[in-house]
Length: 169
Image 1 (cartoon, helix red, strand yellow):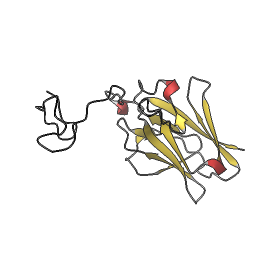
Image 2 (cartoon, rainbow, N blue to C red):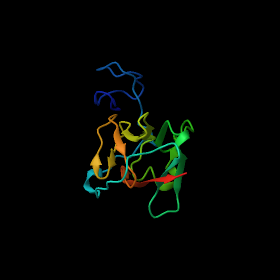
Image 3 (cartoon, one colour):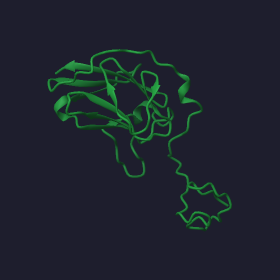
C-alpha cells in the first residue's frame, strides 16, 4: 500500500495509477526530493541596514560563507535570478546553483528563491514556495511576496547562508 501525496489517503494499492479518494494521479516520493528540516526557524539573524539602491553600474555579489564561492552578476544582466540546486532528473539548473555547497543536506529546494530587479532600481528577494523557507536577516519570507534586498543582507535558504554585497562594476 502507498499513500496519496495530495490527500493523505493511505490505503492505495501499489499498482493504482490514481487515488480512489481524490482521483489525482498517484506520485511516488522521489529519492532526490528536498529533505525537510527539523526546525529551520531556530537560527536568528542579525539585522543589517545597508543601501537598497542598485543601479546599472553595480554588481550583485552572493557569497557562501566559509568557502571561496561567490556568484557575481552585472546589473544589466539581472532580470530574475533563480537560486536553488540542480534537478538531477532533468538536469535543469538554476542561475545560482548551490548543489556544490551541500544544498540537499541543508534543505535547499531546486527553485528555492529568486532575486528580481525592479524598474525602481532595487532588487527584491522572493521565496518561491520552498519547503524549508527563505529567511532575510532572520525573518521568514511569505512565499511569493517580494522583499527589498539591501547591501549587507543575509539570506538563508533552509540552513544554507548567503551574504549579499553590492559593488561598483
